[in-house]
Image (cartoon, rainbow, N blue to C red; front, side, top):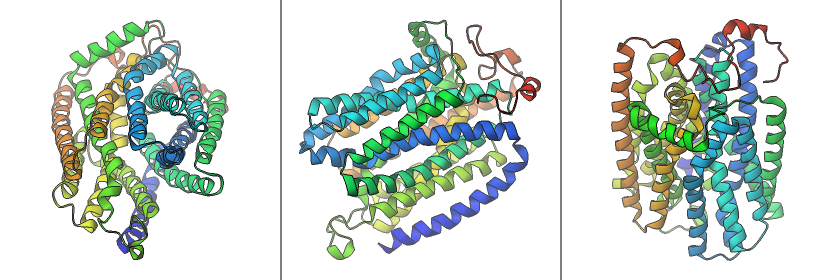
Amino acid sequence: MAIFISSFWVLVVICCLLYFFTKSSNLKSEDGAFKKFQMVYLIVYALAMAADWLQGPYVYALYDSYNMSKSEIEQLFVAGFGASMVFGTIVGSFADKYGRKTNCLLYGLLYGLSCLTKHFNNFWILMLGRLLGGTATSILYSAFESWLVYEHNSRGFDKELLSSIFSNATLSNSIVAIIAGLVAQKFADHFGYVAPFDVSLTVLVIMCVMIVILWSQNYGDAQASMTDSYQSAVTYLKTDSKILCLGLIQSLFEGAMYTFVLEWTPALTPDKATPAEGGETGIPHGWIFAGFMVAIMIGSSLFTILCKLGKVESFMRSVLFVAAASLCVPAFIPENQSLVFISFLVFEVCVGIFWPSMGTMRGKYVPEQVRSTIMNFFRIPLNFIVILILLQDFPRVVIFRCCVGFLCASFVMQQILYKLSQTTSTSAAPAPAKDPGSIPSKHQSVPLMTSVDKEKVPVDEEV
């Protein structure tokens, strides 16, 4: 018990020191227009993530309170990941064709309907909710980032500042996760397990109102059919090795990460817990979860520092290697609880570096015209990995060894991507019109602004 609580406070001190150090070093490079743009995005993004975090801790508990069998609960969870895998590419293409702002509003609608289904003690209604929630999750991890990258480039902001937004997004996501956990706990204690879902629905409504008021619309290729978007995305994956490597890195790492989320509780729980150790499970879940979130915040600050020391493609090789090494502990020496916990904290720091790093590399390599579609293609192997793990009855050490294998494979893919980026950087620089992140296709309806045009935009213009 002591190591969990003491570690949390040590991590908080480290996190605060790193945050203020990175913040002071960034202030001089950010102008007022960029700060306003970043703030509007981060507020909406934080609300979107808060709606997701509010639901997570109580999904299983709610199903269990409805007297669902273990088999039925597993089917519901598999349905959620399956919906994300099957319908993800559809909603991704929808975003590129009909607008990223519209797709983010669709996220609010689908997830809101999913929250409403939690009021019914009926397997098939709950199944519908899982399908809606899984589809909404695909939007959450694609459309918001796609909107951000396009708007950032179209407003003429320095491309290097995009990594700053991703770092701050990871930081805010961790803070929101801790707050959402506390709020969900409070409402569940007073009003029952369905209450956190009602709070999530309220947050989603607020988020949608802010998107309508504050966000402009942008597209991929509005004139292309959804079939054409699929074909274009597949063509990019076949012909551009960097995009393919990026997709494999994301799928393999996040496959290990989501598997870790499912397994950390039993991995840290003593085989024979006593009341003196903390009750039935013997571990303080709240303190451990909070510690993980602070570790992710530390990772986001380290990302900012690492960006000043080298390129993302380079330092991510070391990050992925450390991530793989950290999960070797529960895979090969699972009996040492303290060492396993420390290894989990190291892994979470790597997660905090991974998220903004992937966002930065996606902004660099994924073409604007089919950005959302390709990003959801990336999630297909991820969801397949999680479903495969859920459907098997592997021993815990075998599951963690699979995670180590996934992370080692992602390290190899990152090494290949680094070599490809080195080859690209040493070749002749491409013409400006070839930059998909800066120049839209002829069908994109939102014109770009140069840095000169940006200065002409009034301060109070819609963000």
